[in-house]
Length: 217
Image (tube, rainbow, N blue to C red; front, side):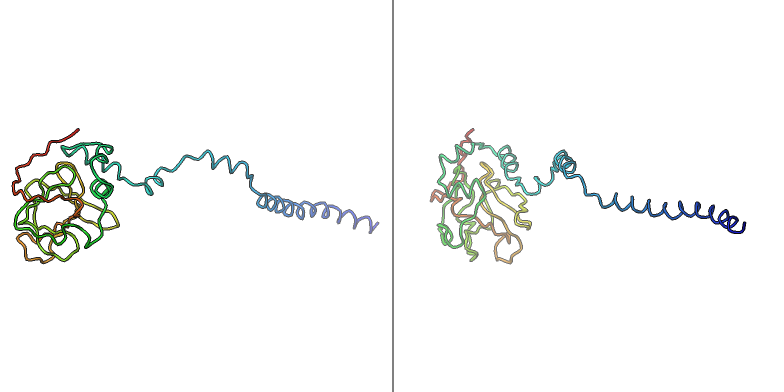
């Protein structure tokens, strides 16, 4: 009688403890199995393939030189095409005038050239740019001028190589000449230095600046 009563009392407790012990273990094991399940590589690959391209990466690494060329060409009277320029310029002239290159310092034809009179014209379109009176000794390794013939040279902001400079180009054809620098302390009327590539120039002893080069389409 006593043992029967004991079994009746213990039996309900045993039935109640089973779900209490199993439920936490069962839930925790399911949680672990779900977190340890490796990702579906095929689904991940499909998602990456379907992702849209990010346009700013291409813009970050690409150059805007083409856009600059197009803008410059539209703003200058002489709008010859690249092929037409290649036909009249030698490779070094094309590299500097049309591709904004730079000659090595101290190597230019007009670096130590100081005539008493004459005009420095654009090597591309023959437009007059500087007179002999504008030239001065700067010691920089390139021909230097403190001023230009009025309206002959156009200035553009140049942000290449992580620095802000002022590029100078031929107003008539947009050919690259070099850069202009201000406030360097030279004893000149303008305290400016037009640092110009000799390759961009063609000197003539004719002192006339009345040339009006014919613009070519």
